[in-house]
Structure formats: structure tokens, C-alpha cells
Length: 194
Length: 330
Image (cartoon, rainbow over all chains, first blue to last red; front, top):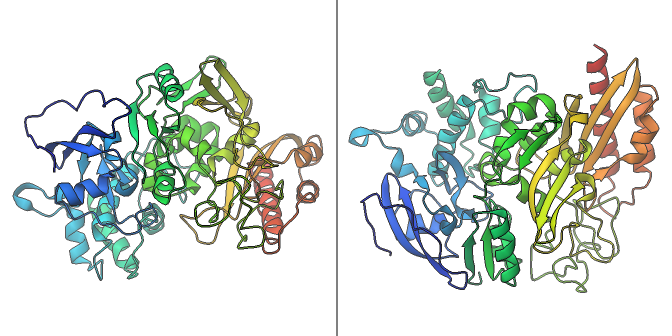
């Protein structure tokens, strides 16, 4: 494990010479700075789980196909299994653990997943929740989806009905098949926000 | 995965110089395909030259009315851009039909064009593949090839190009801008990818070390009615079995402009020039559309298990043409 500091140091600067196979990499994870000496082969998912003991993000397929590893990088949802950590130097990462509010209050989506019993085994849940955080932000920013009417006005928030939620969360697989409850949970939070 | 060096380029010149200085280098964009191929052992770069933070992340309107899209613009941002949605709807629709929200947030415009085929023989180093290892043979030709090419394939390779975005770019007469130490050049998007022939290891016409800097959407197709249609095994998050991008202008009931490109049928987006030539100047009717698309697909040479692609491609193309024509008439 690399050294940590919370002094708000600037990102690690210029990467090492190309012949080097490791670089000092600074990540701000759930509002804490970490400067780590990382082998270039390490992906964000493994760094989170193995170096930072943040085991919320899960390794499902490890190929970007299942979404269990979804986290937010600079506020955007991505598959952490496909992100080389060295390439994220200076980035802000939020995992499911970082969604808690003041006094460890659950995020509204975490609460809604519990209220709606939106899981069975729970393995995909952290990825589903991080992805849903991204979905709600993207729709609020006016990002269309495959099922948004082509004539919908640009730049305006897109209302999230069940078809929109299903389409936008299609990168998160649930092998227990809890999809109807997952859509319910996201719909609850989307409905409360609008 | 083999250990590798890493360079983060601050400028286009720095990127191409770093690539030239390091044998076995690869450019890294969003990494959604390259990192996966490295995990699979298909790609084994010695050095990654990270171009994802180059100042190529803007969509800008040029004086001549065209739209320049930087190579580092992420797929989700391009799909959501108001000028793209308003002027080139087929491009926005194609992007949104591809991958997942997470992948589109990471994937770049340049990287999308340079993604490799998802042929399972190419992705598995334990199986024979002329694209991965020239001369090794093709496992797919007599193997599992339901998803493979029906047009323009060769004895060496029957892979398809997986991009949705590139299909829309081909139909919209977009151009791809390239840069290396010999200077800048620009090529039509429809000619950027190549057919496999006897060099299936080469997906595109790009030179080693050459960098995609931007994609330019022309003023000529800005605002023309256009649409993208994708047929796949499930309603979301799957590669195309067949897809089509159509740009159609109808005036007085006759076709004034037609740009048609198919996806998932060939080693590159398949620009349907025969169909376009048959249509322009003629009536904008479903019969005329069916005739023209039929002329194009007459060249198809399906394999043992993918003959379904020909009627599928014909049906979605005729349907999109008919819808665009009726929208223009109403």
C-alpha cells in the first residue's frame, strides 16, 4: 500500500519516464487524498478494493460488461475495471461508501433500494446504486438516451419514466433478476427530486 | 498483463513524438476496448501514450457551418450535444444505441473509430485468427460466425467492425482528421476503415503512430433528415446484428440526397453507393427504396449461418427510408 496524505497535495505531476512501469498517482477517493505508487497495470477497481479497503465496488466480469464495478469519476459513472488508475491521476472518485451523507445518513438511493427490497444477493447493488446516481445526474443535465423521443428539446432535463430507467441502467446486470424493484427504487428517488 | 510504460501527452506533437520514440507504443483514449484487449492478452503494448487529456475535447462550429468534434470528446457528451442532436440526429442516435452509459462516459470519439472487432476468435489468443496473428488461419469461417460479415469479406477474415458511431459518420459524409510528424491530413469517414483483403490485421488506412485529432461533420448534411436503426439480440446494450444510418432529402416527392450506410455487415461501415445512385432523382416511395436497397444487397455473400442478416438489413433500411420520406412529406 502506498503512502497516504490528507494535505490536499497537487496531483503527482509529470508521470515517470516511459521505461518505468510504475508511477506515483494521486486519487481523491470519497473526499480523501491518496498518493499511491502504482504499477501501471493496476485498474481503479483493484486499487479501491485491495489498496484502499473499499470493497463496495465489486468485480463481476472484469471486462466492462456487467457494471458491478461502477463508480463515479469526476461525477461521471464509469466501469472501474476498465480504468487504468495511473490515467486517473488527480481525479475525484466516489464509491458507494462515499455516498453516505452527514452522520452516515444513507443516500436517498441507498434508502430506496432498502425500502423497495431492490436486490436478492446484493452483489450488483453497489454498482446499480452508483450507476443510478449517474443516471439521475445525466438526465437532469439533459442527456438523452436510446429511448428518448428524437424530437425532445436539447439541453432540458429528461423525465425518467420506467423505460428511460431501464434503458439507462442496461449496463448493470442483476443475475437475481431484481430489475422491477431496482426500477421502482430509482423511480422513487427520481420522483422525489422532480 | 505485460508491464508497460506510461506517458501522458500534453499536446498532439508530444503524443506523436512519444509514440515514435517508443516501439510497441499504443495510444490510450478512454481505454474501454484497449484495456480489455490487454487483459485478454490480445494487445501487449510496451508503452501507453495517454491522449485522453489532450486539448481535443471540444465540439466547435466552424465558419463554413461544419462542426468539428475533438477526438477526446466522450461518446456521451457528443450524443447529448445540442448541435449534434439538432443537425445530425443519426449520429446522436447511433452513439446512444451503442454500449452502456458507463462505457459511453469513458469512450472517446477517436477511440470509437479505432476499436477492434468483437469477433470471439480475435479476442481469444488460444484460437486461430488472421487479424490477430497474420497467417494463422480464420477460426470463424467454418466456426461460429452468426455475427460475421456478409459483404466485402475475404478468405482471410470475415470480421465486422463493431462501431455504431462510425456508421452514422459514413452516411453523413463526415471526415476524419489525422496528424503525425509528416503533417495533417483528412480522409472521408467512409474510407477510413478498410476491407480485410489479404491484410486483415489492418482495420483502417491510418499510418502507425498517426493520431486522430478530430472528426468534421460537414455543412452539406447539417439539418438534413437522418436516422439510425439498429437490430440486435436484446433491446439494449448489445452489438448490432445489422444497423443502418440514413440521410435523406426529398424535394417535390423525389430524392434529392441520399446517404446510406450499413453497420455489422462488413469489415467497415458499408456505404451503400449503389442504392444511393439508384435513388437520387427518382421517386421517394417504398417500392423505390426496396428496389435500391435490393441492388446494394445483391452483392451480399452470406456464410453458412448468417444469411438472416441480408433480409434484416434490407427491412430496417427500407423502413428507415420510408419513415424519413413520410416525415418529410407531412
